[in-house]
Amino acid sequence: MHEVSSPQTGRSLLEGPFFRDLIFDQAGREFLRQRLLECLGGPWPEGSDLRVCVREIVQKDTYRIESITYEAVPGEPVPALVLVPDGISSTSPAPAIAVWHQHNGEWHLGKSEPAGLAGNPRHHTAVALVRDGYIVLCPDALCFEERRDPELAGGDYERFEFLRYLVSGKCLAWRNILDMRRAVDYLCSRPDVIATRLGCYGHSMGATFTWLVGPWEPRLRCLVGNCCLPTYHGIHRKKLLHCFSNFIPGWYRYGDTPEIVALSCPKPLHLNFGTKDEGSPIDEVRHAVERIARVYIQAGVPENFSYFIEEEAGHELTPTMWAHIQRFFLKHLQG
Image (tube, rainbow, N blue to C red; front, side, top):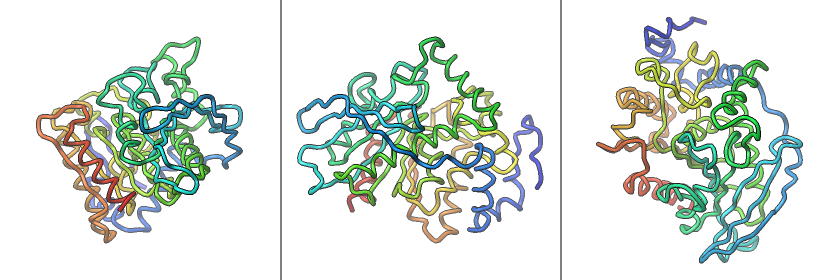
């Protein structure tokens, strides 16, 4: 296996013919998938009892919010909010979407923003989705909202967790993926959910979560990410300090972040971007989506990958971006 040149050169192995050919082949994608698993930290533990606890139920105008916890690993409950449309039950189930919240340096916010209880109204996306007829799960990511540490503030605690996993041979992305897989376990356990019609959505860090979990969760029928695909090439060129979940030790020997995204193939995937988003430099994004698209073309499912780049948009969720998201979920979860 060849190594990349030094990060200062901004070059990865994907610029050579070996990997350009490898990623197009199913066996090659499986090879890269196994290398990614090694870089993340190895297999995840087998699922245990979720030990679901319903803490509170609040009725809204056309839906209810269930405040719950479930255990990702024994003894570590994950607080979450579940939005359920009126009229949905075990005899009248609905498709479901997991929403991974953004970072934005707002560690006091997690699940409450997409659930419409705090934060930026533009990102009250779970409310919009429940009104479209979906059951929506909004969990707290590790280090956010109810999963903060009482002693270490915000970014200090996130840095601590990243380093704690690093010295054990794993990374924070490994734990994020574990938590997301347990979120899917929870959705599949609900009798009012159509378990064959599950999707996920995220903005910013939530978009990173989306393409991180894609290669590992076959029960997710489709994936949507909004405004986050920072390539290592772009990070090194612009000297970006990004969310810890983007950094997977050793992966740059084999590929860049678009190659992680491409490992979701043939699963339907849609990505939105803005040309003025400094966190995902647009030159690298344009190159990245071309590489992802070629993988889907080679796999015979070009229709399963789509993307939208909005001119003059920044790191945001615009009405046009949201319209693309709604159409995508309508096609793949209700069509």
